[in-house]
Amino acid sequence: MNKAQHFERFVSKIRVRRNGCWQWMGSFRSGGYGVAWSRREYRAVGAHRLAYEHFIGEIPNRFEIDHLCRNRWCVNPTHLEIVTRGENTKRANDARTHCKHGHRFTPNNTAVYKGMRYCLKCKRDSAMNYYWRTIGRPERGTVTPRLRR
Ligand SMILES: [Zn+2]
Ligand SMILES: [Zn+2]
Image (cartoon, rainbow, N blue to C red; front, side):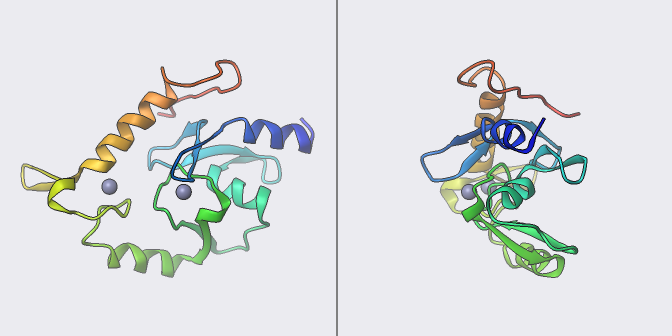
């Protein structure tokens, strides 16, 4: 596959959501991040990292990509920011009033089960993700969703 074909294939796995996020329709790894094949590194990398490289530029060593929108499945390059590992961890600690995806634990958005708080938006999102990755995918044939186990 040449570079243009590779790019085309990458873009074909993106669906734009109404909130501006670009939902990755390809494979996912367990943490909720999309994965895609990198031509340059010759291995599977985070789909959001690949999006950053495709649309913005190379990611320097020891840096990672943070989601400003907190949606791990999002590959919109304008929702991505380059940070050092330390910054990313610090942000995660600062967000204790929020779920790990950055949604506020408001009474309307919080379910409690066996003493644990759950974010209802995330529950809905993961249900939607499952839906989009399986039965709900549009244009069958252009998208090849696979669950990584
Ligand atoms: Zn986004
Ligand atoms: Zn959440």
